Length: 247
Image (cartoon, rainbow, N blue to C red):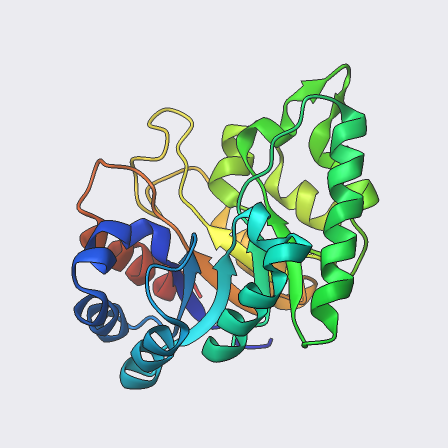
């Protein structure tokens, strides 16, 4: 089976990163992380981010990029940033719409963004949330959106968000084969929510890993911990340790 490296979603340690960018990334590297997925509008210059990666040896495997930064008037700046850090996955972290027609429109706009990024060797995609799986007028907006967004776009499934929304994680992966190039490994407990770390929750981890390594065409595991129940750096270390034991 192919080896899939493990990264951390930097939103998990956003406070630590803002306070001490280099120290935080060095600590993540020491834990055993191989990559990072940055999140949000950049706080620093493209060259500063590149220097962080070069000094720590971490790889930028994605960037959670606000929707407005993929619009035509901002695309050049977004491309410049991602070229600087060697990132090819420009992922939209959140979208909201009121009707299925609105979601179809967003899917078509994501296709347009995918076409614009393709000339730079980059891809875009969407990161799911629990509300995407809640039926609206008898149909899930997730299916409406994914039915329009074509195979050039990435489905970045978030295991915790999907489970919170009542989705069958393996069912979603199998429904859209080959679309989950990067997957968020987020723990979720049916009784304790997002508080537990990976391995102490209810996500079917062994089945998820088996799918990604056999049928998923997955390139990166991205660990995300979003609860305030544990100190962030401790939580992402414990999650990584648990994943390593299961792989």
